Length: 116
Length: 114
Image 1 (cartoon, each protein chain N blue to C red):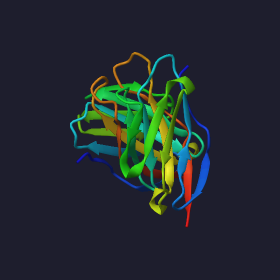
Image 2: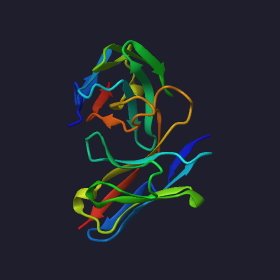
Image 3: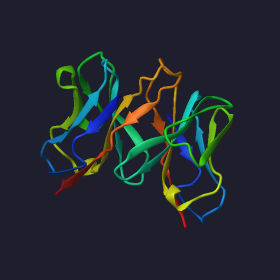
Image 4: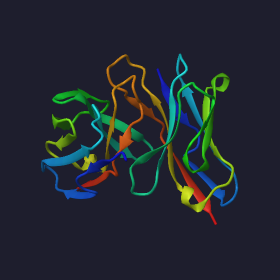
């Protein structure tokens, strides 16, 4: 069965240091993959999307993610954290069920805290 | 600019009440979705709709129903609210499968059932 696993439920970094949020997926094929961000009391916003065009994907706010098929990973990174990056991050994959609609599988989320 | 709006940000209801959550999108999207979000569980799909008057159950449809009379509006109905339906409810919309899989989300409705 397809699944998306976010390896850390909480990550804490200092402002100005690198961010790494880890995501592994299981699928019998190379899927599309997304990262969404949710700021407190807000809806989810698309951060970036992988669709097999390039393995390194750049998103908004300086985030990027690299698709590694050999490791079945799609980790999210940012070279230098900003206080405004504090939010919850979701790794997401489309569900391959042959239906007419693009259902999604969500990871359980990683809460990123940024310390001053 | 893409916009999905939800009728209420916060809602407090009593057990047994009928509750309506409304969602409107202005992007002419065919697909609309209702999710609930609970700590440690991520987002779980309740119902979705791929066209007007068309709907399909998601992963956790029990205790919920939906209505889609117009393309831009998708309503989630709690027929008889229970305390275990206290949650954050998120609406989303997207183009059809194969065209664009990105889902666009509303700000959410935080429902408390007492």
